[in-house]
Picture 1: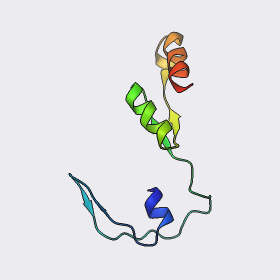
Picture 2: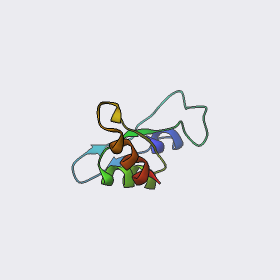
Picture 3: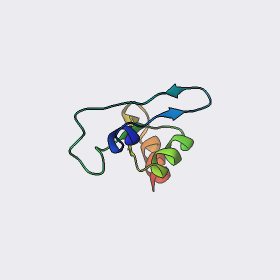
Length: 76
């Protein structure tokens, strides 16, 4: 999404998926882009989200409070 928001006509050719030139209109007003939220429970997902400048969304409300503390420790 960041590339679509930043570039005029980005394209992506990965190992499993291919996107030819794309356009997105209107462009977001937030600079450099709107906030991106990632649902995370796995430590690998936390690492990926932080590495890519994303916010983290998790739902420990149905779990013991110790799980929420564990998420906080991973985030920090």
